[in-house]
Amino acid sequence: MINENDAGKSGHLFVHPSKDIQSTLGTELLRKKIIVCVTASVACYKTIDLIRLLTRHGAEVFVVMSKTVEKFISKDYFVWASGNKVISNLSGNLEHILVADYGKSDLVIVYPSTANTIGKFANGIDDTPPTSVLSVALGSKIPIVIAPAMHESMYENGVIQENIIKLKKNKVIFIDPVIEEGKAKIANIDVVLEAAINILNKSHCSVDNAIKINKNNDGYDKNVIFVRKQEKIVSEVKKDSMTEFFKNKRILISFGSTVEYVDPIRIVSNTSSGKMGVSLMKNALTFGSKITVVRGFTTATSDIRDDLHSKIDFKVFDVATSKQMHDVIIKELDSALYDIVILAAAVSDFKPSEYSSSKINSDVSSLSITFVPTVKIIDKIKIAHKNIFLVAFKAEYGVSLDVLLQKSYQKIVDADADLVVANDVGKKETPVGSDLNEVFLIDKNKNYYHFPTQNKYDVASNIFKMIYLAMSKL
Image (cartoon, rainbow, N blue to C red; front, side, top):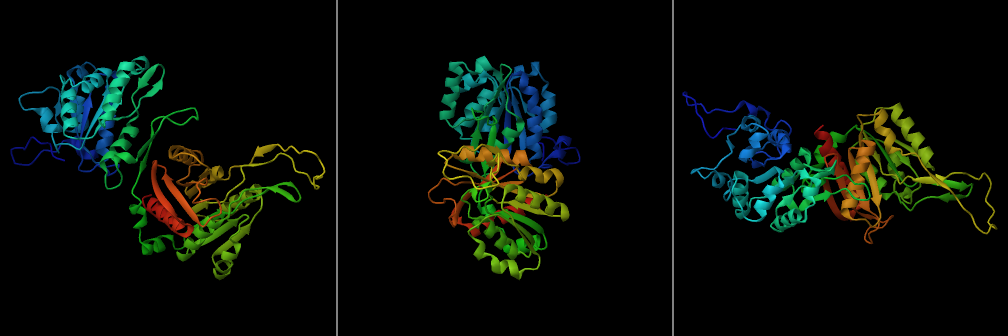
């Protein structure tokens, strides 16, 4: 990118050396002009890292700072970080109009923002370069993101909260601070990056598609933002490209339900049909992949027999209990080099702590059974096989979207999975065992794709398209 200023005597335009990192981590913000306003908080040293991160994802960053910031950090650091001139005072050149008037910039970020700046902005006071830029940007409909940083007691001040609410009503986006050690600490730069990408990369998503998860009684992480991507990106993947990519890939798929025995004839299980796994298997067969199936109990057995017997590179293991499924999967992965593992089986989460080797007498007046957790198969995969692309499934019942996303992402963290297929089995349209499903695909970067209700074969097709897109970037 070109510094707006100087041309050397030879007529060549000058490119600041700091621009050599531009787009080294991605192009999500390419050709986007972002104004970063810096106010007089001790956290302003972190702004340097944010500027560099935005630049590494393609943005052209211009810094506007209040004069008092230089009590903490020199203006030259911001010149170095951005490779552009820094605005620290306003003159007859009307710098605030040049950067924040209609169409002049794509986004304004205040990082960090003091309570003083929030109060002035909320009440129309623009006596510093940042507040003047904010005043113009709000009027010219440029998106504004504010990341506060202050002491917790100040942040909880009712007047400050009223100012925040007032600005939110004017569509200003706030990224909540992290509350710890009596401080309202500024949000991590990764959170701000995701918000910027969500707002500006409109071909993929929009502001309304950012879902923020705050820490609550369930222990959810604070400042986690999930970004919805356009499903069109996935659905437009060509079958020929997938066939070429997946041909001869070795894929293990588990599906069906497991059972846990109480006595020789009584079991504890679930109502999974295995239809999703069968659909995954049938899709994989069309690519010419080398497939291994680990199958629990399923009502879809008759649908796959012809496929099983017609393919040479096809292995099937039938199992009953969660331990049997665990042992077969681990042994199989140790015996051959697999590329992809898709764990679609509905494995029992609990089993009876004791097993009766004889049939329990049905004449007893009551029966109490203690359950203990089963082994989490998915947590074992990446420990021994780090290069496998691991796909997990997460089923919840009657939960909100934010809970579904958070629990699904936690599975990615716990198992080092690459992709989670999540769905709410409590919906009337897609009950357990039906031929239809509505799913959300969540990746490691907290992006998600929503596929409304469709038949399970098409759901499986979209899952493989997502795997293709993710593995092609590795």
